[in-house]
Image (cartoon, rainbow, N blue to C red; front, side):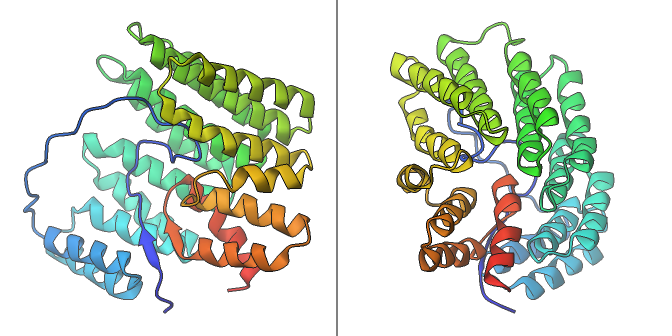
Length: 318
C-alpha cells in the first residue's frame, strides 16, 4: 500500500480553515487525563501507524482494540476514516454507524459529523443532512443551547451541500448558521463581525456558483469591508485570497484565481484542488498534476479532504 500521511480529523466539531474562518481568542484547554480504558493503547498505536501511512497495520490495531473492548467507538471511527480515505465508502459507513451507536453523549455529535463527512466524499448533500441535522438538533437541545456550535454545524452542512451542487440547501443552512449564531445574547462586537464575515463569505461563494458575478463581487467587497473595519481578529484577513480566488475560478477568471489561490492556505487540499483546476483551465497541465499528487498525500477526513481527494484521485488515475 502506498505510504502517505493520514491526517485524520476524527470527530471534529469545528470547520476546516478553508471552509470557514475560525473564531478569535479561545484559551488553551486543560490537558485531559490519560485514557486507560482497555484497547486505548492499541487505538493510540493505530493512530500513529495511520499518520505514517500504514493503513493495513492501523486497521489491524483498531480491530485488536475492539477485541479488547467492543465498546470503543474511537476504534470504529478510526477504521471508518481510513476506509473513506481509501474510497471504500459503504464499508466505512458500517463502522461509522457502529461508532454512533457506541458513542457516549459527549461523543455523539462528533460521531454524527464523521458519518456526514463520509457522504461528503461522494457529494451527497441529502444523506449528509440526515446526520448533520441530528448534530444540530442535539446542540440546540442542550441546556443552555450551544448556539455557536450549532451554527458551526449548520455552516459545515451548508458547505457540504454547496460543494455537492445543491445550492438551495446550502443557502438555507448558511442562513440558519448565521441566524443561530446571533441567538447567543452576549456576542462581542468581534464575534458579530466574525459571523457577518462568514455570512458574506458564504453568499459570495453561492453567487459565484450560480453564475452571478456582480452579486458575488458585492459580497466579496462586503467581506473585505468587515476585515478593514478592524474589529474582527486580523487573522481572518487570510481567508480573503481564498474567497477572491474561489469567486474568480467559478466566474471564469482563471488568471485571478491562480494569483489569489497561491496566496491562500497551501496546506488546505481543497484550495490546492481549486488551484489545480485553474491551472488546467489555463493550459498549465504539469502544475495542475503536481498539485493533484500533493493532494493525494494529504488524506484528511474532514470536509476539505472529502471535497478534494476524489477529484485528485480521478485526475491522477490512481
